[in-house]
Length: 251
Ligand SMILES: NC(=O)c1ccc[n+]([C@@H]2O[C@H](COP(=O)([O-])OP(=O)(O)OC[C@H]3O[C@@H](n4cnc5c(N)ncnc54)[C@H](O)[C@@H]3O)[C@@H](O)[C@H]2O)c1
Image (cartoon, rainbow, N blue to C red):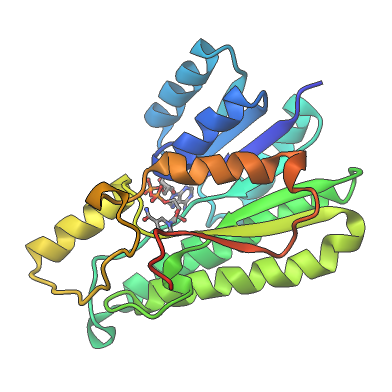
């Protein structure tokens, strides 16, 4: 019987690269996201690789959507071996005093409440199984201070709190929970952020990425390789870990 993975925020960037990697690793997949067209295209791509996948339109900020997503995964595949809580949003870079209530609501709702809903309902299911395995996508922004993203950084720090607390609470139930903290990965989110900084003349005093890497940012595959490791039994002794993949930007 194949293992089953559920991915939230699966249709673009890091989520998409992770879905394709886990399909290659032999997982049956349930892909959750808001864009039906992109979701169906990704299902086709995975089926062309010989994999099995379903797309379920899900807004992770809506608890009933998350409950229905988990129920669909269990109805279809009988269990959830691995959950990747990857959905995330950011706003155009701006200083603290320019950050709006809408920015705060959007970021906390998706990054914190959505992460909590995903973990809560997946953990409820995993408690009925012999074991469970969860990875949450944090950020280098939740580890070091950065100019222009105060509330986003706070949301990613909050995510680490959820991961650490839950890792401890459910370790005795054989559910392990880890976080990846990417930094500077080429995805639609990064493209949009860089473009809005340029358009709005927002000068962000950023440290350069220490690792030479051909002068380039990271690729989604730099993250999906770690997702593959965390989803496998090769990482069976890891829980509560935060793994930085950021070219050394948090050093
Ligand atoms: N790209 C980077 O450099 C970087 C750095 C640090 C952290 N991250 C984190 O990695 C994760 C993936 O980001 P990415 O860079 O691949 O960008 P992305 O924009 O390609 O991916 C984010 C995905 O989340 C989905 N999403 C957003 N809100 C949602 C909601 N309410 N319900 C369901 N899906 C929702 C989006 O539609 C999108 O598919 C995010 O959590 C992001 O904060 C990215």
